[in-house]
Every structure is written in structure tokens, then in C-alpha cells.
Length: 225
Ligand code: DX5
Ligand code: ZN
Image (cartoon, rainbow, N blue to C red; front, side, top):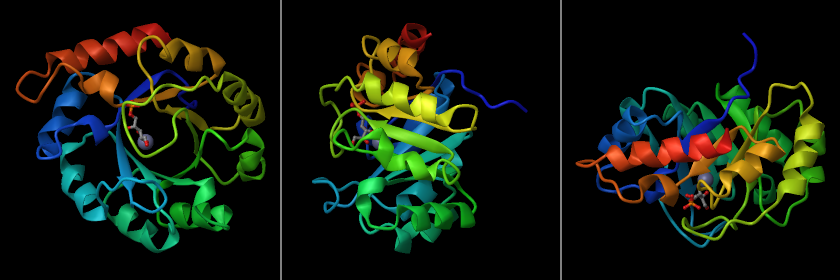
């Protein structure tokens, strides 16, 4: 099967109702989400705390498609097994989270998940140059990680550089932070294929009124295409 570089929308449940994750995951998938993006924060690597592997395991049965777990934690390695056992399809670790990102990526694949590497806005594309054979996804942060609803940073030049570095390799470029219908076309044109969106997907809707989720997802996808 050829590698799927078409646009995929990955709503971040950071913007969902935390008391209702199961229903929120079912709602966004029913409304057209391609992947479900799960933001794990430790209050150490980033200045916010969300949840850990137990919550990932609890929401897993409510997700039919890809559970895309973004670890904003340091250290990472001791927790990989737990996030893999929780049913993560993709586990993404930050290159800034420790001195041994290559070992971390090997451990993720060794645990049976796809391996992603994320880079903060201040980290250059060159930081992942020697990881191309160790990753399935590169996540370019277009905000400083920690919170939803922040202003998009236009890092198109970095995205374009990564797209060239990837060449024909089966590696996704995911963009995380400030994606909405006005910013999606910028990153898609630069070469991104996975668009994470929190506030721009969940705004205006709820589990009892999920229609706006679909409207929002379709607006982002249409803008990107
Ligand atoms: C930021 C998280 C993002 C965030 C995106 O640290 O990694 O996934 O939820 O939220 P929006 O789309 O609101 O910028
Ligand atoms: Zn994220």
C-alpha cells in the first residue's frame, strides 16, 4: 500500500470536556476526525498537567481509528511501555525531552507503536536530520507546548525543509498548535499532512450537540486541500 500523504485532521482532546472523554472521542470520529490526538503533559517538561497512561487506556475503546499520543513529558523512557500497553498507535516524544532521543524512538518501536518525534518552535529541522530512519512521524510545534488556544507561529520554512529532508520516506509531517481554517492552508502548502486542532475543532459544539465539530473539521480540511 502506498503511503498516505493526504490531509488528516487530528482533533486534540485537550480542548474536549475532560469529564466526558469517551463520548467526546466517539463524537469527533463520527463527525469526521481522522486521528484522535492525545496530549500528555507532566508539569515539568511543560507548565501544565493533563493525564497519563491510565486515561489513555480508558479512552482507547472509544476510538476506532488512530490514537496519536503526544508526550510532553521528561523523562520519557520509563513510561513508553505503559503508553504502548494503553493502546497508543503512535507515540511522539520531544527531541528536547532528554539526551537520548534515538534510544527513546527505538524503545517506542520496540514496544510495538509507531514512533514520532516532536520539535519545539525554537528547535531547527536539523535536530532530526539523523533520525529519519528511526521515525514514522515528525511533529512540528507551531506554538510553545503546554496549552491550547495559543497564537499560531508561521514556521513554513522549517516545514518545507523537513519535507525535503523526508523525500520519499514514509514519514508523516504533523503540525500542532494554532491550526484553524486560516492557518491550515499555510502548513499544508509547506508539506504537512497531519493537522492537529484543539480549539478550532471543539468550539461551538458538545457531546449533546456535536454538529459543530463536523462543521469545524470540514472547514479545516477544505481550507487545507
Ligand atoms: C499544545 C498541544 C496541542 C494543543 C493544540 O501543547 O500539544 O495539541 O492542544 O491546541 P490548539 O489547536 O487550540 O492550538
Ligand atoms: Zn499535541
